[in-house]
Structure formats: C-alpha cells, structure tokens
Image (cartoon, rainbow over all chains, first blue to last red):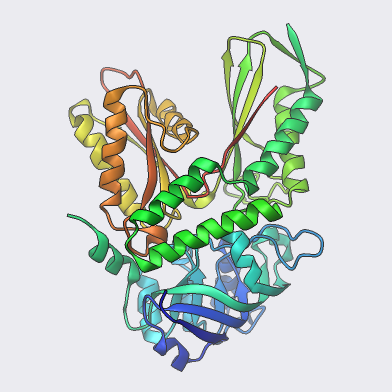
Length: 185
Length: 280
C-alpha cells in the first residue's frame, strides 16, 4: 500500500490543496458529524444569517449516524452514510468555511464546483466498516440537536482516522478515473 | 395443532436481530476472500482487507458491523398446523425487534411517518412478509436492510418485446448508475415477472440465498453468471473507487406474469449482506 499522508483537522487551504485523489490519508484532531436532518437545520440557520451551533470554518463534517455506545465505550459503530443526499446542503456550508467532507459514494457537480471555488476536499471512508472505523474515534460529545438521536451533531476527537481522497479541489475525481481505468468495454 | 407461545417468538426474534448485526455469514466472507484474488486495484484490495478486518472485529466484540443496522425485514414461514398462543403474532415479532435493537445497542433508523420524519425510537415496526406453508413449524428469517443500498433499488415495468435483453440492460445500467453509493461490492437481487409488488418481493427474497448458490433452472443460473460478469466489467469496484469487484453475486428469482407485462426489479444489497434464521 502507498504511503499514508497524515493531516490534522480542522484544515487549512494549504493542506486541502496538497491532497490529490487516490491519496491514503490518516486524520487526527477534531471533526463534526452531521447527516440529513442536521444538515437541513444548519442550512436553515445559514439562510437566516444566524450563528451555527459550532464554528464551521476549516472543519471536516463526517456524514454518519452511529449506533448507541455500549457502557464504557466512546461511541458505537460509526461508518459513513451515502453522501449524495447532502449535495443540496454541502455547497452552502462550504461557502461559509467548511473545508472537508467524509462520506461514501460520489458527490454531485454542485459540490465539486463549490470545492474548487472555496478549496475543500471530499474524503471516502469504507462504508460498512463501522466497527473498524470507531476504533479511530477517541472522544465523542453531542454539541447540538440531541433530539435527533443518531442524527445529532457530535464533536469527535479522532486519531489516525483512515480515508481516501475521492474528489479533490483541483477537479480530480477518483470515481470516474476508476471506471476509466478498470472498466471493460 | 402444535402450539407456539408468543413469548418464545419474542425471544427468538430478539436473538436473531442481535446476531444478524454482528455476525457476517461464512458465504459472504468466502466471497470477499475470492474477490481479493481477482481484484487488481490497490485501493480496492485495501478496502476488501478493511471489510474483512471489520467483520472479524464485529464478530469477536459483538459490535454491529455497520452503523446502519437497518429496517428489520422479516420473512416468516408459518406452518398451517401451528397455533400461536399468548397474544398477537405480529406484535410478538415487533416486540422481539424492539428488545433486540435495545439490548444489542443497535441503531434505531425507523421514522413513524415518511413526511413528518420523527423517529419511533425502537426500530419498529418491522416489515413482515408471511407465507403459510405445510407443517407445524415456524421459521423466521431476519434480513436487516440498510438505507444506502435500499435507495439504489428499482422496479421497472418492461414491455414483453424488451425480452431477456431488456432485463439485462436494466439490471446492469441500474448498477452502473448506483456507482459507489450502495457500498460495493454489492449483492444484486433480481426479480423477473409477477406483478409490480410481487416482482419487488422476488428481488428481495433473492437476497436471502447463500452466495454462490445458483438458480435451479439452468437458464436463470446462466443468466446470474452472465449478469455477474457484465457487472464486474463496469470498473466501479469496492466503494466505487475503481476495480474489478463491483458485485459478489447476482441472484435471480422468477414468477409467472401477465400477457401484457414483463416486470423486472433490482434490490441492491451492500457487502454487509446480513441475515439470520431461526426455526421454532
């Protein structure tokens, strides 16, 4: 396996610009979770010009709804959910400072355009590997929307969280490149 | 008449709900091992290794292999010589799900109303498909179904003139359009024939078959092999990041249909192809 790049979250433009599709990346630092219902609320706040429940500048948002933690555990299983459902919301958050997304599956052209314009990166985690991924999460705290249960916004502390750069801020797309390389006509 | 108490049904369903979430079947593990032998993409091989390691951790630590522990889909075969005593049969099945998802620390992913979107808090109601069969046994199979792969499923009412080629084109195109969304490598359940709803049911039922086991009719067994080859030529690969392993298997189920119709359905299943059964 190729050498892994280590990055620290939150991200800077310099770190984002250095990431290229196919890079194996280990993330350490702080990331936030949000999926469908939380994104809807965040974007409603952006629309009204109100403050978000956390400072989104430089942040990576992880699309995930974990299983409940067992007694003594930091978090339950916590793999990525499908990202395209956030296509409608993510460009709005990138415009106010979000720098990264972790999910699975391709994101749409509207997201890619925002990523190029504002310098952001899309990272793929392994969908369905929730038990393995949760080992990289060392702390978890609900910071907003507790009423949403699994969909609440959590602040996660991560150490060597494994992802692959799937869409980069230079227009690189590992999904279409993969099909071009491995597809048989 | 043989009597089965609802208390026994509750306990049985609770048990299989918890086991399905943590224990991946030997057939799926073997298929992933085989996929590693043919995969050429280094990223793809790395992902297949992570899936294997994840399954090992899930089984040994009794942790859900995926955070999406699914909508609880139950296939019930109720022997006609069985009498259920002690309460409501469907409520017993739902109570088993309620207890299994609570005691197993599984995620509650069911909303009480599709538009209002408020969580029921206990992962009920289950989706219950019941067949009355000869005998005095009760068989319950749970197939927890994740939302990501279920969203990549479709029913199409083809024309009779579309024929087998139309069915193949629909299935392969559906997998192509799904890309990395349903967590490939996937298992593809295909229903052909019946009515609109029967066809979707066939596609789901096809997912219960063990990987590698072919349809008893040679024509459809060959179709399964051909579809699997065509799908794995797409290049989508593990997680959609490119590679040779897009599907682990394709299962086809068929049923008689109307002279005007050729229904076809694709039910997509992620690599966490979970199911457990119990016989009472």
